[in-house]
Image 1 (spheres, rainbow over the protein chains, first blue to last red):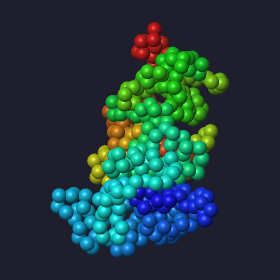
Image 2: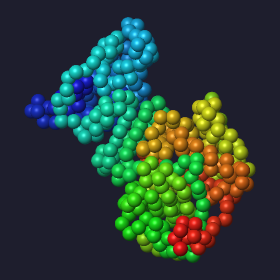
Image 3: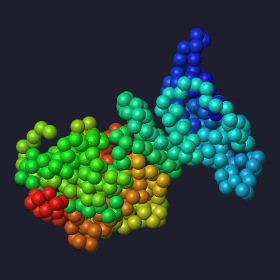
Image 4: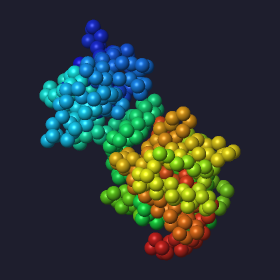
Length: 274
Length: 149
């Protein structure tokens, strides 16, 4: 079963049963490439598999090869199809005018609009990314809370995701995600004030922090609790506790910018349970 | 073009999280700041932090990622040939630079470390440590500053 770009997403057996589901990043890099030996990949083009999932896998698009990792053709557009009013066409190595959700290139010589609708039950990860990227009209991976949780369900998927996300960033892609809790991610700035305070014990430091985050905080990540109004965050990772400190941060609840980061320290050796 | 700084770098695992600690001693802060400025101004492609002899941590290659939206995190990384390649958001790079420039200006850092959550295949924390930091205030003073009296 194909999506609107002609990419096979669901491979079935002769009885109609599901054999494999495929998910792709916007420019064709496959999210989980080891599912089967299917060679017809992104937009229905044959993928030259050096070894499934390796970065030098290329899509054979007849007139040219295209690299799904960098979203670029490896040779110049021989059809000279650039148009002055369309800056996206000026780069003659670009694939589908930089908009792979809307356009396809059937033969490496032309960019055509894809008008067919998606027809398949698509894995949530793939669908969400496709919808999000289409909305953003660019190379954006938008990952919502549900998807993040799905990805985090298996460590192999998580490993694959972050590795590919890092590759995408280093290749110049815009990557955006939401915190699983729906809260803005905490982010220090050049104006963040850092300071520290000494407490007599871990218990006293934790009580101090809890006073700020309140009795009903939101867990926004491993070891991170945030007050209901989003203004205060209590951060205590195992590494911090080993070093006899925790963090209390004041945040801008709208942006997540860290206004101040207070290190709460104590000198006692004895640890207490949270 | 890239630049290289040799610094004590150590890595260990704490509760299934890899923690990488980089020591920026007071005498190295000017060099570290200069390299961050080169990166910020796009005058170098990357800054390589190389573990000084006997420290045994991974090499860390810092890149600036202009388009890294910070919803994903402050930094994102991947391992390659034993090297940790880290893409920093512009804001994160600015925060590092401001912290270490203030330490240079004042002769001591505001606190003895910065924690950076990095998104990688497994969970990684990067800790930038300094060896000269301002003394902590007392708990009473902290309460007064935060209006918790």
